[in-house]
Image 1 (tube, helix red, strand yellow):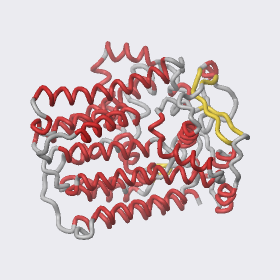
Image 2 (cartoon, rainbow, N blue to C red):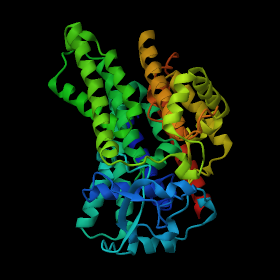
Image 3 (spheres, rainbow, N blue to C red):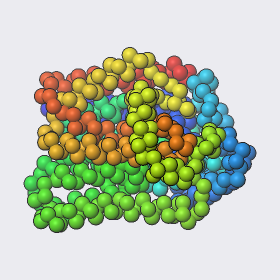
Image 4 (cartoon, helix red, strand yellow):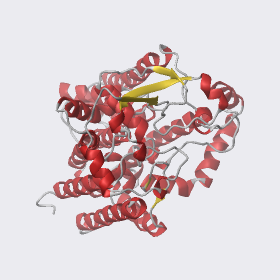
Length: 471
């Protein structure tokens, strides 16, 4: 495998299973996929700023208003051809989508349905309308081509998912090329059911996962060179900074890995620090500009758990005051959440899906695959100094803190001792930093073959669980 190029075999396996899960998973049986799809389609039509709409009784692409107060809120909306969102495939966020089985005939009908862009459905996309256009770039391009070629609705849907899979596959492949010593670990992370399912979808998570994996691997590889920094590398840092801001700003901490690069590669200490500060500032500026355009300029009411599930006593402004006055209680809430929700986060990290995340694999799968991941993390082969490991853990910890802070503000009742809204898959983009920092043991023999076997096992388990849940 090493002589041939293990990364070639790994990426072939990833793409094969990705294509199979793409076509086997029923449309929209993934968390928030209807609203992600609608946002991607909207961008493909050149609508970069989502229009606002008062919450009404029309179709909401799986978003159900449970709060009487939400009727006055101005939320993001989207208009898509009705043929792309048939009622059979759209589920309410509180429904169990595994109880409704899918037939092959229904999928065939979806594939053969003409697009008809004039007959449209309008609905709310409260939590995805704020995403910048680059977050859906592969899927939006695929939708545009499908529309130009006048393809059927179902074909366009699957083409959009396939474009996301190809983009993520390219990112995973180059991640393994940049870090050849850690390629089995990268492959095993990519073969987790959660990663695989999200990659082969229209969700923004596809681009986020790919960009974060590639960015982490590339930055770690830059520390192994002694050549002077090139203009191409500086341009690459700028693109990475912008893409991380567009994916999710909380993952901008990956840019801290820039400070692992030998100072001599850039020049004098002042120049080295100035370039690092500029890259971080570009990331922050991109986030602020888009926030001003999408939120400040439009006057949108950002969706909270009050609109989503009708949870009362949720107010971001009041929550900020509570955190400022009771920082110890806020930190205690984070610790309490990590403690009581550890298995929930673990399962969500490795793999749960369905329209509401209700599809779990057997517990034995999480135990076996989790132990395999830890073993490969401990033997991943990255030659890191203690301070370099510390920076990786620090960057991941800051992202984790930011995730909990954000969800504490908009998804958690004021002063609660448990942070609502944090999901296990949110930790996937920072997983290469966490697992990469754990390398303390020598690499094992036959590591590529063992990783390939474990990856295939995960792929088969993913397909099997999906088949028995939905068919």
